[in-house]
Each structure stands twice: as C-alpha cells, then as structure tokens.
Image 1 (cartoon, rainbow, N blue to C red):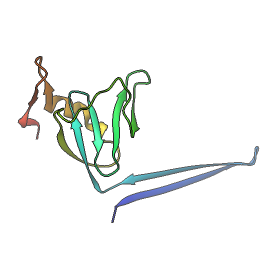
Image 2 (image 1 turned 90 degrees about the vertical axis):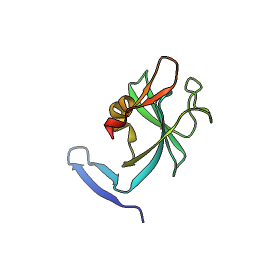
Image 3 (image 1 turned 45 degrees about the horizontal axis):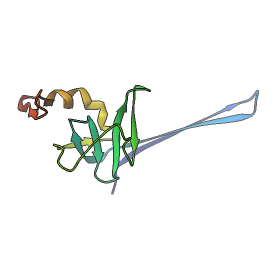
Length: 114
C-alpha cells in the first residue's frame, strides 16, 4: 500500500460566487530512482518518468520522454537513489556533490556524503 498525506482546502468568494479549491497530496512511501549525474536526470523506476532541470524556466520538470537536448544512454553511469516523495530533485545539490563528474567524463563517488 502506498502511503500518502492528503489535504484539501476550499474557499468561496462571496463577491464573484466562485470557489477555489487547493488539493495537496504528498507521498510518504520511499521511491526508487536512478540518478544520471552526466545529464543531471532522475528516473522514477515505478512510473517510468524522468525529472530534469529545464534551464529556460529554471524549474524541474517531469516527463515520460526527455527533450532531444538531454541524452541518457544505456551505458550512462547511473546510481540508485531512494527518496521519500515525488520530487527527488530537492536533494540535487547533495547528489551533484556526491556523484561528481570529472574532466574525463567519469563519475567520482564521494563516499563521505553517505
């Protein structure tokens, strides 16, 4: 069973007679992701969604198919990440430090950040 926290909020504007509803769902079950440091991409193994940082909008986006400008190949180094929630990129600064890309393109794993 997937754990989640659900909250809802509704507000009625008496002047315009409109209702605004806000719903928030937070997953409390750990997800398994693959992190590709050479592309700075996360792959959610359970949903087959990718998370990548869009430079134009300066936000993290989720998609089934990566844009042509971002390459993840079968031979690309990948590392397992377990994260509780649906937004693994929130720990991105730590992941970038832990899985450092060297000048030769190889990944150096900094064990001290475990």
